[in-house]
Image (cartoon, rainbow, N blue to C red; front, side):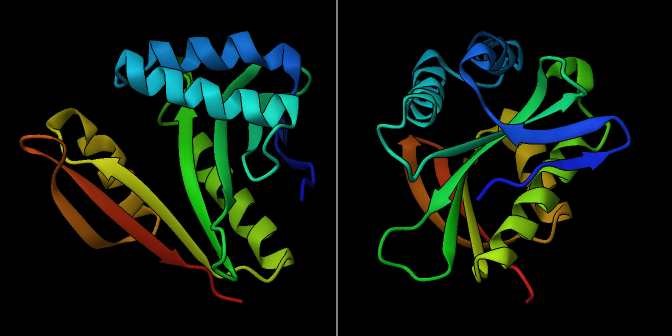
Length: 167
């Protein structure tokens, strides 16, 4: 399900083994994630890289043949025809607010259309320093469809967003 996409000098391509240290640094440098969250992000990247779970897909945004400056991790929802989960979307702090997250998301939406998928879901936390993530989803046309109170910790709800991808 990977098709290369170019925008100006930005290339979206599958993550490869040599990207791993850059992706880990990117997740750590964001400063938004706990050690446990970073471990989960890296576990999903590793599943993609070693092929142990083909339902975890990772695409990177990079300038030409350079190291990645952003990535998106996603996969089909088991037993739910036409639905995908957006697990992670991360942009290096030095490249944030340049439209890279938007570009990655638009790329994924095009990929989904090509395979007949129509629903994209994302989960995030309600803690205050995740406000930027929640604003990003809202700005990209996602709607909050559910909130599970105190899911991650007392006062930190799981917020579930959904976007319908028009055919």
